[in-house]
Length: 532
Image (cartoon, rainbow, N blue to C red; front, side, top):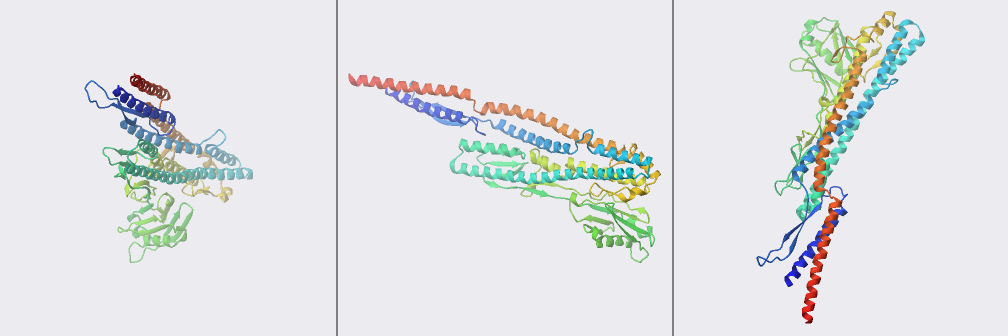
């Protein structure tokens, strides 16, 4: 009888704790990052083989599956990459969006229409003014597209800084939780919070957590950022921008190839030209190259560039500004001969990466991968679009100049492109005839595209922009389907089901009442015995 009293007492206590755990699950059903707790019980040790001593409440543990959790984190990180890529590419697609009555294609068509009108009456002031208006609008539209792309890059730079700050903040919070666990033990609440932070971190970068021992290590792109539980290395932004360096072959500029008085023409970005006379009859070698070096280094218009001779006496012109901001185009001709650049010339490049303790992170997923890709010249869609616009602008200048006795446009890129308004009145009938035919010429070479026209080249650019969006959207949809499947499986295992918890609550409440009745029955029996 007394044993029954103690057994009922242990059952009463266990049921009470089980009700508390179940109530806590129900209360936290919608708490972000909360994993449901499961009651753990065991039979108390027995003194006799056939007699039990009741039930032991062994605490509550959170339900989780480390393998499934890690898979969910890694796939969610990849989904974040495609999602960020979609956001970037879609915003660029909006920049290039067109309707039947607006957009650069319409502007380009209007420009050629105004040329056609002026060709019919070359002295008509109305037609001249219309060509002026359409030419200026075309230049403005091209530059507006380029400026919008630049604004997108500026926005991404700001976003990069903000997200890196967020990553470091999350890492600091994880370290803080690890310190609490060292001092107070690994409670379920702290583990829930750390899991939620890891999941949030994976939205930015790909991570791997080592839980093989009591020591907590967290890696980003394979590089330790948290090790030995509380040691932290922060993520930093690294810029390794490359300055443009044009190399001119030494033999092309040998003094023996030219004569005194030959005109040296040095043109910067198709707009600024230095002109000087060659002096190559002196006793020293490389006089022509030294003249060019001195002319460039002493002219204020060329202050952003430095000219010099390397150890092989090749003429080098290098930008003083690293990266895409320092891009330039310098054309050199001597005695009417265009001096070619060596294939070993170096193009300007922006290289943006993330580092941890001087180790560059080779990200495989996360939003920061998408951002750094777009800010790095070699992997960027945006820079590719900008280069296409530059190719269009340069071709516009070259072909209109080749087909006219006067230049309608000048410059070597979208940024330096300008319309030469004063030359409109100097256009001859032959000039207008040739220029008007450019609209239908499908044998042009624009950038790396041959056998194309101005209209076709730009339409292909629009197709490329839209295709990139659609290709990434397909990958995003496929990846989201994978994440949703994993998340559903994981949530079914770890999240609170209110119906299930209500059943548990009723079960534990019934067990509590049953044990209470046993105690009451034993008490009544004892009272009866004592009253006899």
